[in-house]
Image (cartoon, rainbow, N blue to C red):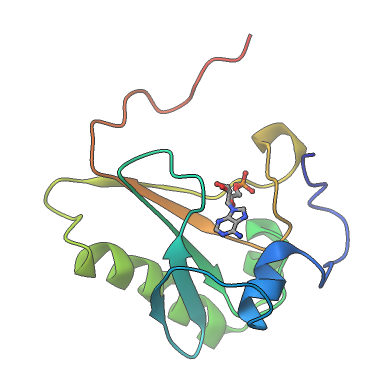
Length: 127
Ligand code: AMP
């Protein structure tokens, strides 16, 4: 079910459990601010999720409440992960779903990094 991004943070969400080490992930990168891991249901040959370590529901929550250090660290981590994976020359797409219309499923901010094939039009049509 899609997340209502106006709701408070739920520390039982799956990414909170990954951050606490309660469930495993296929880790790509970790630093003080961020964790990156492979998506469990990849939509492209490379599909990595980058999440901040802080408890933020969505891009909205993060951009409003995170410290400058958290924001800088997270944005740099997303870029670093893509660069280290060799995605800059072939190209990649970032996506951060926020709330109901976006079909956000996990209520902890995550940026999808898609790459490894032609990614097609910006948005799928659903009508
Ligand atoms: P979104 O719809 O933007 O909230 O995307 C949530 C993403 O999390 C989906 O692409 C899922 O495949 C992915 N996901 C859910 N559970 C896990 C997990 N345990 N490990 C890795 N990725 C997951």
